[in-house]
Structure formats: C-alpha cells, structure tokens
Image (cartoon, rainbow, N blue to C red):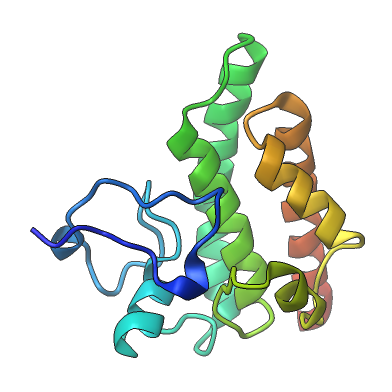
Length: 164
C-alpha cells in the first residue's frame, strides 16, 4: 500500500495528508473526496496526470463547481444545526476552490509561498489573500463557510466574464 503524501508544492497546514491508498485512485479523476489536488500531485511528483488547467480548464472548473455545490450544501446543513462540518468536507471545499482559482488561470495549484502564487493570478476575486487566508483558518465556522461560498461565486463570475 502506497501511503499518500503531499509533494512540497502542495504542503500547507490546512491540508494534512489523508490516510488513503493512492493506488486505488483513478489517475484521470479531477476530484477525489478527502484528497484535494490529486492531479497536481501526479503532475509535481511524476509529471503525469491529465493537467486540467492546460486542457479545457473551463469544463474542469464547471465539474468542480458541481461537486462544490453538494459539499457546501452538506456543510451548510451541519452549520445550521450548530455543528461543525467534518474536517474532510472543509478540506474538500477549500481544495476545490483553490483548484478552480488556479485552473481558471491555467496553472496547477501551488501552496508553496501561497501569497506570491496568488499575486501571479490574473483572474481572482478582490482581496483574495485576506479572504482566502481567513477561510483556510476558519473554514469550519459559519462565517468561514460564507466567505468561501462568496469567493467561489465571484470566481465563477470572473471565469464567465473572461469567456464572454
């Protein structure tokens, strides 16, 4: 069993490596629950994967947004019952947003020097640094959830505007 470990480009306190067997994952999947950044992991570690940020990133971002809708619905239900969402849900939601953010700029996610990586992006919501870092720190709270939801909506609008 090959234990999953994030490569250095994807290491961040908000994303602890899940306890999973990587040999069970489809190398063409763009989203794997509990394991954000699967395609980037393949790219950075083996120069493999389908590189959705290079090929039809708009379609990949739409697929991720559908996944995000389901995750946000589950998170909202938990928060409305005054319960914290499961850590893997928060991690998935944050991972999907970061993937949409970077892929819509034709780049793989890079969490090393995240502030610098964000500064290099052309298509991004206003005040992305401050707002994203708040979400990374408080993603399991109602205000963190709301902020993440708003960031995703803004990014999707910016993507649509770019395509128009």
